[in-house]
Every structure is written in C-alpha cells, then in structure tokens.
Image (cartoon, rainbow, N blue to C red; front, top):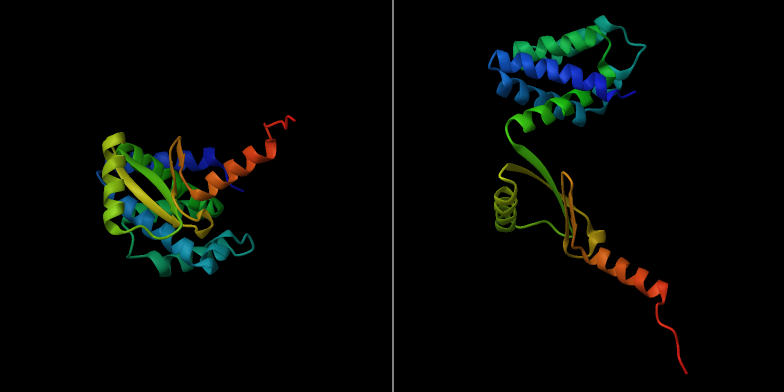
Length: 185
C-alpha cells in the first residue's frame, strides 16, 4: 500500500540530510540508479515487497547488489528502510525525493505525446520554448502514441495542450452528434 505522507517524510528527511552534507547530487544520482534498477528488474520488486521473505535475507540480497555502487549515505538510508520494513514505499520515496530535488533546482517535467518520434531539432526548439516560457530547466519525456494520428499533446504541471488530430476528430464528432441544426421546410 502506498502512503504519500510517509514517502514524503522519508524523502524530505533524506533530502535535508543530503543538503546539509552537500551530497544532494550524489544521492540524486544514486536514487536514479536504484529506481531504474527497481523498475527494470521485476524479480527484485517482487522480492522486496514479499512479506514472507525475512528482513536479513532481503538485506543480504540488497547488499550483494548495491554495496559499493551507492554512496554511503544513500546505501545506509535504503538499509534503514529495509530494517523498518518500508520496502513497499521505496519507489514512492524515490519519486518524492526527485520532486524535492527538481523543485530545489528549478527543474520541471514536461510530457509530450506525438504520433511519431520527434526529430532532435524539434526537441531542442520545444525545450528552448518551454524553458523560455517557464524560466526553468525542462526535463522532456517523449511518448509515441500512434492513436493521435498527428499533432501533439503536451502535459506540464497544470498545463495541458492538446493539438492532436484525434482530439479534433472527437470534437467534430461531438458537435455533429448534438445536431444544433433544425431542418426548416
């Protein structure tokens, strides 16, 4: 079960400690590596979330995978989470930490969905435009969705811009279904 309050508290504690020790960059890169490893390895997710497997066994497996690859601060923090049986919250704690990191470094995430992949020059123009408008560093996440037919959909914070052909077709379909015209003879 995910508990955003709990995840936020752990992430804030780690972020504050890392800031105090000037280790924010190291901890951020470590957590990115950890989150990526967790995301790519389904067996590791199942193992960490399995309540039947004892804590010392999880610790041994965790140690064999991450000892020496993570900074001591990150490694010890993750060990504390394992000891406290907070494995189900690991991914949300990482997400909350990334939110804190992005807010502190003025980084905003933008998601763009298109029918076909964007060219590099178009990505650069889009990044420049969004950076100029928001006065922030933009982290662009591209999603290819052939259902859009053409155009694009941009999501960033509260901004939602849908300029896809699919949405235009749906709008036309809705207008025609309402039949605002009366036949006069």
